[in-house]
Image 1: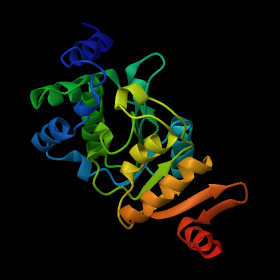
Image 2: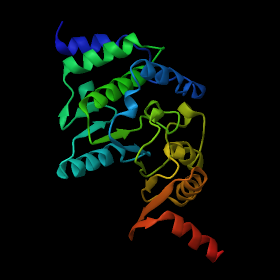
Image 3: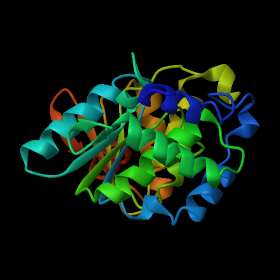
Image 4: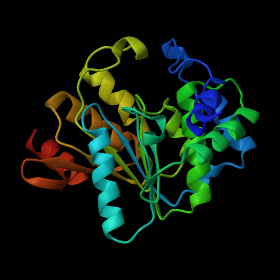
Length: 240
């Protein structure tokens, strides 16, 4: 068996790429698998967690480039891939090798609690990241926010929301930009910076309200630069 074939054989152990119903977006299975593996998601250095509709992948690569330029060891998890699944996992500047990926997936399979293809890749990435001892891990959400497999991260240093538009509405059982924005805001964390890209008015209002409710510290990007979203909300209220 070739190394690439070993990766494909390991991936074949897992079920469909995405849950079939909105109610299937739960974190219990991947949390259980990661617990069996020693909870590697708690040992991945500082974490930048990225969601949105457009520009998630390019944002991840920009953050990676900045980290590497600063001399940091940076790991990156993105999706989907173009040619090889290895493209989704980058360890300290290099794509994960076939041998390392197959081994990680086989270890995940031993802890399997009915994981999907994407959950298995996420768990394998987190396992590899922890063993690589990075300074910074850049994680792109697969789809959505709080219910996405990547969101087993409990303490991201920074959350980023790229421009939002209507996407995956059938998958999630919601409709409209406001609902999509609320879904993606699920990655925001209490007392953590939330960098919000320039948005349409509907998405912007929802994201700032969700940031307030979740206790995040919003920094909003608009045509004039990066602004303190908390101060902006106070100013908006004062004008009413």
